[in-house]
Amino acid sequence: MKEATTDELQHLTHHQQNDAKTVFGFWIYLMTDCVLFASLFAAFAVLRGNTFGGPAGNELFSLPFVLTETLILLTSSFTAGLGLLSARRGDRNRVLMFFGITMLLGIFFLTMELTEFHKLAVEGNSWRRSGFLSAFFTLVGTHGAHITTGLVWMAVMMVSVARRGLNSTTIKRLTMLSMFWHFLDIIWIFIFTIVYLMGVAI
Image 1 (cartoon, rainbow, N blue to C red):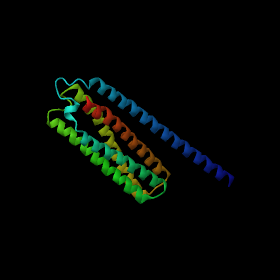
Image 2: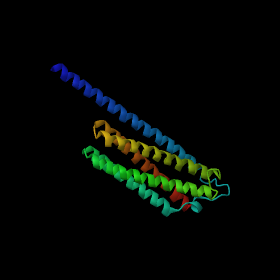
Image 3: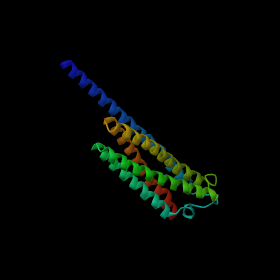
Image 4: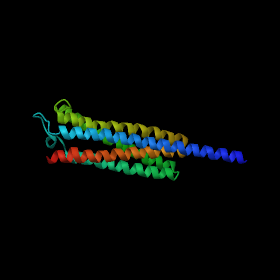
């Protein structure tokens, strides 16, 4: 009996160590993403004035449109938080509901972002037009690529929860997914401020 208890404790300790390593590794990933976006913001700051006779941000950007995008993403971050709270309470139906809403809002946000890109390209203001537009498309497009990754991850997790229910591993993965989504929300706030607000103001 004593040996069985010892084995169980060893297994639990090993499991906790693996969880800690996974979470630590995910934090490292987020830090590397911070470095990536910091580099893109720096490049944008350098190139924002290089329009080469083309339009600048105050001629291209629609603040009401971008503000709507921002509100959608902020709301999706809120519903993702509610989904994680539901997961920790063991309420599978609410998890699926809140992450489903988050996913729909994310798709709506991404659609608006792609609509803006398409409109700019059709008007002759693609990434090839100037250094400013190259930096803009790269920065905002990289954020959009991360949103796409988050949506795919969310879809996989929703299928997993629907089929297998909630357990410690699922909750840990939902926690990391929620962290990733909140991180993208924070990055977008910087994009909204630096790219759009400052772009229109200049």
